[in-house]
Image (cartoon, rainbow, N blue to C red):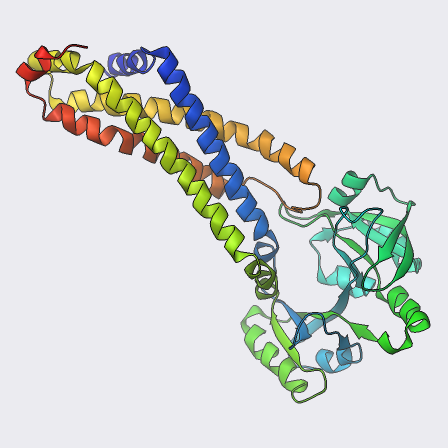
Length: 387
């Protein structure tokens, strides 16, 4: 019996082939667009999602553009609860053309890579980087985008720090996790500081941020207050926050864009819902006499409703499944074209589940009104209908 019902549903779904194909195609486009837009939103929050619960970022309380004295490191390291410490400065150089944007940080190499175990670097390459004053380490995605290889020399044109800066690629790091940012470049803070002292003596011995690892995630708030209290009323007061909060601060600057993308993604689903509802309404009008005949033969209204619901779900889930499958190669192609603009661009399990839920919801909601109409249909009125 069940096999017969399923066969009848499939035959009904493809009875009007052109309409069915166009409806499925619309579902494919809608589910694909929904998945891509959702992945874009995920990419926006990738840095915050990958943040460690035990890492803090200490910066100037006024703004990130104001540096902190490098001498703060000893006082921060002495705060109870601090297990490890490193520091970094944003460089902001241009590689060949302004469009070639990627994050560049001057860091204390040895402590920084200990603090970020998610950056997986071959030990030999790490030692080569630590020995070379002009050495740098780049992420795997960055290397693939611009063709960097170990031993290559790359030149950046400074914006914050004027002049041409030459670096030698000593290592290429991978990510310990799928969501690790592999599009960054790291070089020695000492190289930056020594060069600045020669060119602009007054700007030396400064860092952008201190990165602190706390002994326990439960002590994050306590250690944050202690660090900021250490430099209260000084010439360079600090603001210490969790790494996730620090990353979300950047996302907040473009929050309106993220909200707009979310709205558009659900608007796409609403539009395909209207299309699917119209398809099912047309289908039921054409088959009114057939449904009345089934009821006259003794089939319950619930059975007829199952046929309508099954046909609607067949079209929506068929298009949804194709859309979900296509999301992965299309997202990969999009990521390649965007280069390092979206360092992490992976289709998450949550996005796939939302795509599937939307396809199901469209199929069910589109069938509700036609099911209600057929359930209330009088047999005599239905038999009078002309398909």
